Length: 130
Image (cartoon, rainbow, N blue to C red; front, side, top):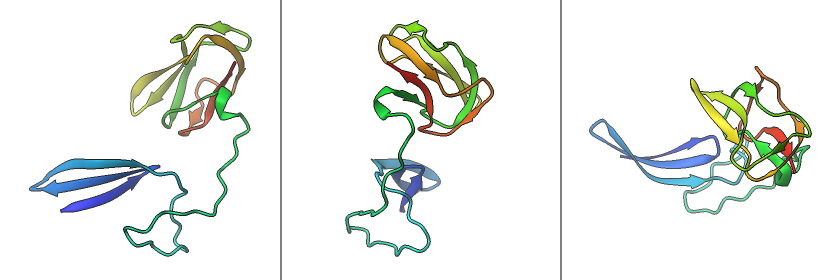
């Protein structure tokens, strides 16, 4: 049997046979989740949304965001510090694993939005970078 499962902002087409599951297709969704008041759309109908996207206080171009929800274990940089591409900025614990958030390019830390011990959500701004 085939199922479509929605988790966060992704849609997975999964086939289950004899107790084994295989992911057939993964699709990135670009709309807000359907709320109970909205009618369920037919399978082949295009998705449209009249909701405006959420605005962030930090522009997407200069913010390093959390790739997944978790807890900040360590902040290894401070405001005004120069960093090189690949340098570890933050250690994020998610699902009992430590994930290193690194600098995407050379630059200077403009603002640190989180502190050690803070819980963060996916997409939440961690550091402003220039």
